[in-house]
Image 1 (cartoon, rainbow, N blue to C red):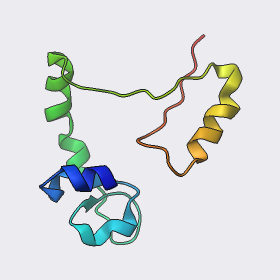
Image 2 (image 1 turned 180 degrees about the vertical axis):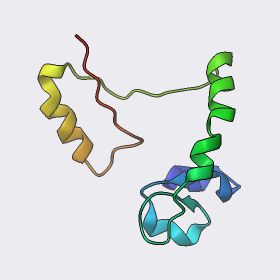
Image 3 (image 1 turned 120 degrees about the horizontal axis):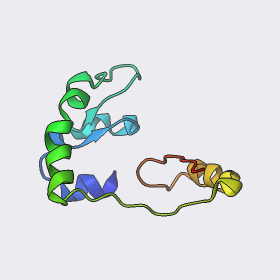
Length: 94
């Protein structure tokens, strides 16, 4: 969040589901917390930018680390680290 606040001039473009301590910075807070916008419109319209970027090859998804399913415990430990960036997704492959 610190990097986003430093680099993005228009704070209305920053959306968070977790940075409720930053409510006074002008960012948009979405989710189920008290006072948060449920994010319905943002989620409903996200595809309008994401799909064209994916089709153009300009959508950048950063994967910090992957784990085999046999090491799922390590992935869970990483998720608990406060300094993590972004979102974690687990995937199992057969």
